[in-house]
Image (cartoon, rainbow, N blue to C red):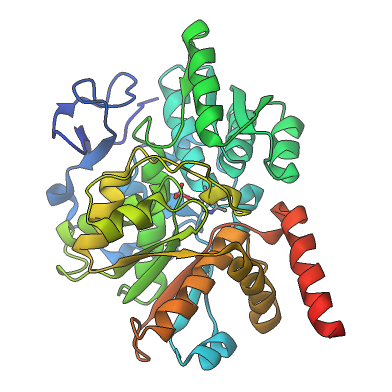
Length: 404
Ligand SMILES: *Cc1c(COP(=O)(O)O)cnc(C)c1O
């Protein structure tokens, strides 16, 4: 089995531009320590990889085979990707936005969009002979890793904060992963994982942007938006940002689509949404910095947004600026309200991270940053089912209001 698809050209450092052959196994740039990204021979693909060829293909992210680094026949898919893009007519009416959509990522295997990246990263590692994979995670990445490792016959090891929502821990244990829970945030869990790896170098890290393939799985969200909107991109995308893999991935997908001749130079305005209790990207964006500083005492009920420092911060900030986008922090109370509102208005069971995008849209709409005729996409990145403790808080608020 060939470990790479024929169109993969090289791996390119996202910061210093150093290039590497895709073989053997790569982590980050050996010169500067920053993330590597996969580059494809897109000129050679222009003539035959057209949007029209996609009709009738497999209903998962593997429909974009020409621009993926792993051959589909080498993967044991769980059906990841090709999630619905749903119109939000009632919410849209309330907000004066008739062209409002949600990309509902809660339908992915394991109930979160982490499935996309980990399907790709685990397959790429397995093809290069890796037997043990691991990462530190706020929860959903660990769950997805455990599922794909089980499916592809690898052993998995995960480090998570003690406060991780229980369903993510259950997923890992059910699928037979080795689970370590660590006091603090994902930063402490990450340090514990790295300490473990110094003793056990045979464990390959698939942590966010520590290898080049998770982004390739996440970028497919950008291709799907184009296809599902009938061959165009939205005007505005709101993305709940922790490590930023999805935002970086979609931005990369748009560049590829331009090189393929699918779109011109226009881009959606990208909005990074964070929680007020952990908003390093928002702060850096507002202060005009190119990288973000570590956020001390990170606190939010949106576990996936409790990321005090992102390795790809400079890539996120660059995409926000180049797209004329912005960054918004919302309070936990706004997130709780948005969860109830979304479920009641549209039947959407949003994770707190997903609900944060709705809360941010309310603010942007009030500020006049989004115009009525614009096409706006919210990302619901996981199911509310994965956050029972948060849902209890939503319900006690809803019920208290009803009694009053
Ligand atoms: C991980 C996660 C995020 C953040 O995603 P990044 O691509 O790492 O920024 C958002 N929502 C949920 C539910 C997550 O699990």
